[in-house]
Image (tube, rainbow, N blue to C red; front, side, top):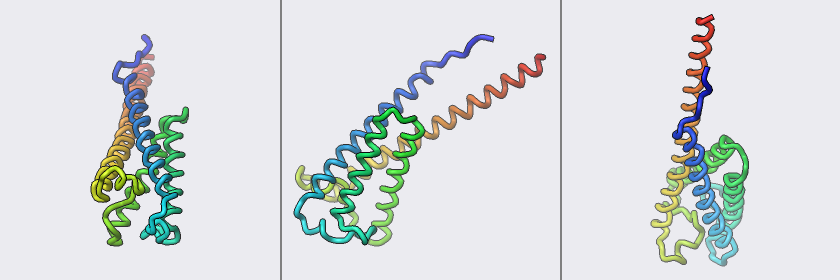
Length: 173
């Protein structure tokens, strides 16, 4: 029996996924830095309770989320397995999505302060910044779910083909 060689497509998949994960890490590091810088600002909104996590002030939530984003970004850049990287990014993005849904359901202001007050400093309205960050969220969540699906479907086809080879070898004997 001849050894099975990986196709060029199979070799490119991890490379593409690693590039995607690096780009997600850059997005998370940038937004974490923006949140951390904003958390040390003097805006009065920082001392108000968050509309969803009402036990936390906006300042505390910014620090907490910036820390989580930083941890996940460093994990994405680490030597952790692809499945751990995928899972951590899906977990973080799902939490962001649930938070946004919570804002929508409770009727809180539609604009999310995802970048702290950096948006205003660079001339973006809260609404524009919110849409940009929603796009980034869609990119990260959609990409991580796509690569999860692709890895699962690839694993399934490998299992099916190896089962078929085993049956053929058993029948040949």
